[in-house]
Image (cartoon, rainbow over all chains, first blue to last red; front, top):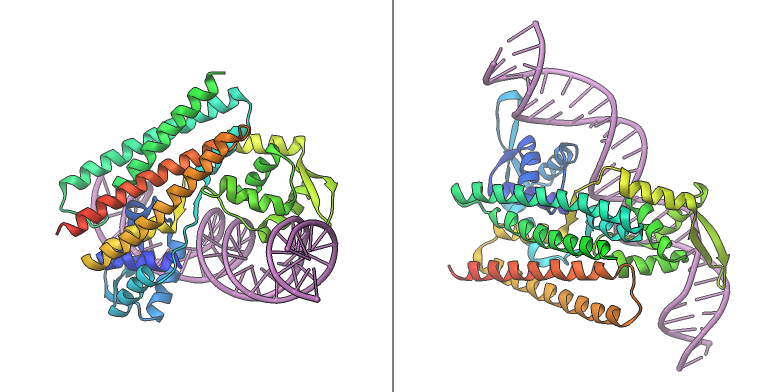
Amino acid sequence: MSLRHAILGLLEVQPATGYALASRFEQSLGSAWHATHSQIYPELARLLDDGLVRVAGEGARRSKTYAITDEGRAALRDWLLESEPNRATRSETILRWFLLQTLPRDQRVAALERERASVGEQVTELQALLEVLADGDPHPFAPNAELGLRINTVMAAWLDEQITAARGR
Amino acid sequence: MSLRHAILGLLEVQPATGYALASRFEQSLGSAWHATHSQIYPELARLLDDGLVRVAGEGARRSKTYAITDEGRAALRDWLLESEPNRATRSETILRWFLLQTLPRDQRVAALERERASVGEQVTELQALLEVLADGDPHPFAPNAELGLRINTVMAAWLDEQITAARGR
DNA sequence: GATCACATGTAATCCGTTACATGATTGT
DNA sequence: ACAATCATGTAACGGATTACATGTGATC
């Protein structure tokens, strides 16, 4: 149940509304896990039911701000330290790259070049994000962007090599 | 529908039984996509229904060997070249690493060290696999292991830095 | 007054995991 | 005989995506 713990982690940093969680998900955890409001709201209701979060305040536009409880903190800690990690990863992007190797040379080169451009954009975005983060006060999830940037950098280098290899025949 | 195209990609390399596909999934595509026989068999039935694969032969133990059809090749090519890629990634491992930053220092260091050991093992396995692949005749999916190795290497370096940073306070 | 961003929910469908269930062949 | 591996399937459940649906507050 990763969604549950991702939400607890975000709330541990700071209380938030469901809506705010949806955006922070993308900003902070986007390169590792993804969720939209239609998953987040029902899960918040379940977390409330289980006493792992509480409603810390209600604001404008019927908004409810949720905060993690001590029980929630214990559940997060337990998951991080006691549970057996699931090491599986899922990346449709990388699956595509692998399957491109079944295509004829010219089609493969063209597709690899499009992928390379896309990863280049990703790298640029992450570099910009890191500069913003370097200015503001230190954010607990700042290292996430750094890891994302480095992974994207090796992916770009791999694509470059694949392009060179596919062209050079 | 990534599963469908992953199967088509594996069959494009070589015809196989559902059982063989399940093992090749792990070997060749494991670091990008994961599937077990309970997904593979029903999907093969659907692919057969849609004319994207055919039964190329039946062998011992009621086994059926499937091969990709021209229609299947066209569907794979279309997906790779014409469809909008889904760039989302999902890694419970990296999510964990991010959430570890919510833990107190000593617990965080211990957990990071366990993660570091696990990535170290992964790196060793991939290096061994690459040596095996370097011997045999060139396999279309050999570059996959190389990318996996490089990503794991930057992850190991990142963990090392996190450990140093967490200790040094 | 219109539009945009904030804000919350549900329903239908699809995909993935885990568990159940069975049988054939090979090697010891 | 027995165990391991090969081989194929189904069922139940849970998680994720997409679509539907509605309302509030701020800004132009």
